[in-house]
Image (cartoon, rainbow, N blue to C red):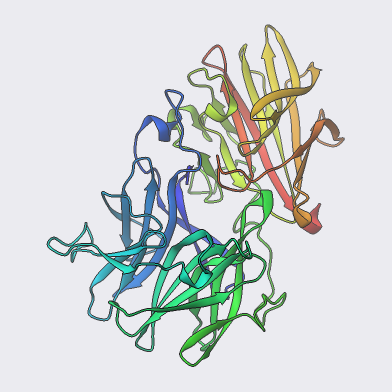
Length: 471
């Protein structure tokens, strides 16, 4: 979405333990809204609903930019781990599109909501095939949800198994409210299609099918789970009468016959000492910038063992601040801490650690006149409110945020330390909310921005993340 690099690619050999290996792009485009300039941003927009396909030695990723820039993107590479993506884009922006290769090598995009449509792509996948008009694939795909669909069928993923076509979608009905996975089946891509409810439990829906080398089948789906965002589920699948049957007695099992998790650190989130002596990449893949970064305003080389964040053009608010560097929060509980040197901050600068979402929380150092203060801020009805301020008489400071997503508790608490050993609470408890204006779960963020003068900078010595039993 609005994080860069974008469309993270993960790899697993057991469906449980995943590792970030690549991204499909560094930036989508060079536009003010993507750059957080001119008071513009793309929160909740950017790239949506990507699909990943492999066909004749080539990996393909399709996505689309919602509103800005308003295009459909196709990335392809023969080496998904090293990348070197070839990229094409074209208009229009095909909503929630799914790439599909048929047995005759024809390539299609299925897209839209309720009235699902299909377009054929040209041989090079650089755009729609000339002379082949778009057509309706399924006119009323929400029908399995009944007449009162509160969420029209969307999020298409099309598969072909044993000669039959299976189209997965998400929908919801006013009659039961819960988000639901539905499947349509056809013997021919042109139809006719028959549809049914495939899975309705806990609001787990939207995704598709995967089969393992040993012949097992699963459905990968997600569930909205409060402030931590959308969490993935694997649902076992059996085949009966030519239909995939999801779950165990219609329910999502709590346990699966799969290897145990070895943890999410360091493969999906990771601590960082910013020591780059023996590391090739300037920033590991776990990091993403909030919007397009200004690469002239950050460095891991100018001071060895530190991440330097320099201020750019003054902005009035944290959400307009460029070069906030982020990682995911993790449920059920997670904690992030930083150490930073604020010696070179200028008047009006604000730097520290954030819980980033529309309703954010910040703990950091503010400079006003010749005085530095430790400040905790959180939003109240979309407006930032200073909750507590403490004078700071030294240049090295430590901050920490603890997040508790257990059973959607969704609370964040903020701390500071003068020595990195004794932590003191500051401010209030942030009631975290998953809001549409950002449309993603909370992220830990390292920030430094100017409100008056340019030229200041801070040096982050380290970022450390823990979760669950490590806390």
